[in-house]
Image 1 (tube, rainbow, N blue to C red):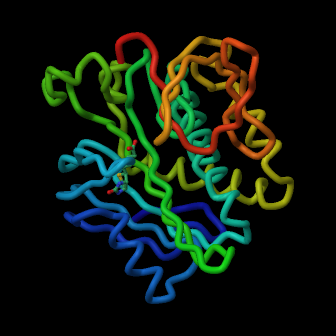
Image 2: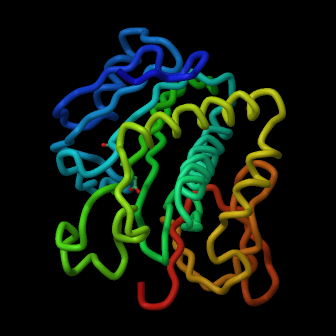
Amino acid sequence: QWGLNTDWLGHNLQHFKEVTSTQEVVHQLAKQGKPHGTVVIADKQVQGKGRMSRNWDSPKGKGIWMSILLRPELLPYQAPQLTLLAATVLAEVIAEQSSIMPQIKWPNDLLINHKKVSGILTEMQAEQDQIQYVVLGIGINVNQTESDIPEELQHKASSLQVESQQHWSIQDTIQRILQQFERTYDQFMTDGFKAVKLKWEQFGYRIGEEVTISTMKKSWQARLVGIEPDGALLARDEKGKEEKLYSAEIHWGED
Ligand code: BTN
């Protein structure tokens, strides 16, 4: 059915009509010892998870709700690089299939015309400074129409269909993502993060601009400089002090 042209990604692919969350399913499969590259896709999630314990609305047949099990030979601090890698892959696939130029809001949001269409949730299981496994979740709003998106979210959330005015095949898009993901992942493992960083920068959102950054501890104004060789975000405050961020939220305007 999936006709994937991949060496290792998605050879074990499970497709469900409905799950709580594909993240949960993959965590279970990981604990059962399922291999690197296992993929779980659902038509619908009833408890889709976003970052920061938010919900991720995952209505039936309207989007890509998918999680990938990875067993990377990386150190735990490198795991966020996988998020940037995945965001780059999604941006490339969307750009290839349409005339849209998506943008990546560090670390993991994919925006089109300043509206979020996709998010990535990377969850890692590590023990004694070793990654046991990573569950990389990809959510993309694909064929929602304007009326499917709650009015109070319409200024900041959208779908591929609304933004591109074209219909997207979910299955075909998943195939392209998995194929491109495998290529990029293999390249990352042989050449390191450099190549991913270069591609990421083509899609980087608000780089060079003044934003508000918030972490668990504080919130401040800074200019986004770019990403570091290890995937951290580099920001410079008004006094010129630079800070490397591994986890933070970025806001601008009244958002
Ligand atoms: C975010 O931007 O907050 C991340 C959203 C991630 C959503 C995807 S959908 C597939 C996978 N399963 C989940 O429950 N969440 C991720």
